[in-house]
Length: 125
Image 1 (tube, one colour):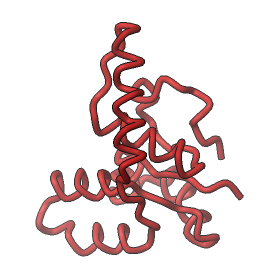
Image 2 (image 1 turned 180 degrees about the horizontal axis):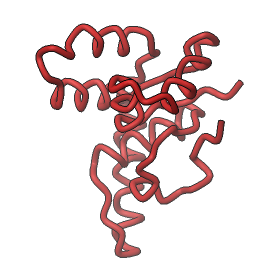
Image 3 (image 1 turned 30 degrees about the horizontal axis):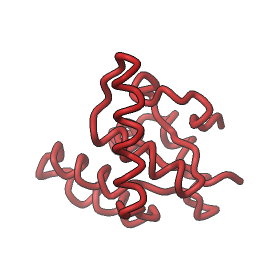
Image 4 (image 1 turned 90 degrees about the vertical axis):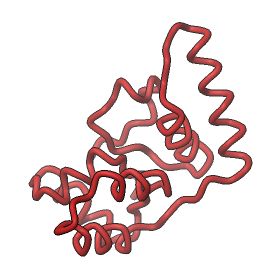
């Protein structure tokens, strides 16, 4: 089974009890194929309510965490510049998450498809 980098929107859906997110994530956990970027950890904590702390920590701990390396940082900047030249402005976070998936060989699970112009990166389960 393909490894999958879970984007923040899907993580939030899971934490809010969305059945489609659970159907996506639970099999990945069973096979140790669920990954999140350290930036998703940041985004989850940035938007977390106090009563969501335990569930959020449990979710994060159930995933493999991908850190930002120098290679990911450099290539993320290149991706940002590449798309900016085409008139497409992406956030730094999305560029780094995308690059993490590329460098580490993951597909991306997201609902925010406009954040990731390279459509071959999407995971179809």
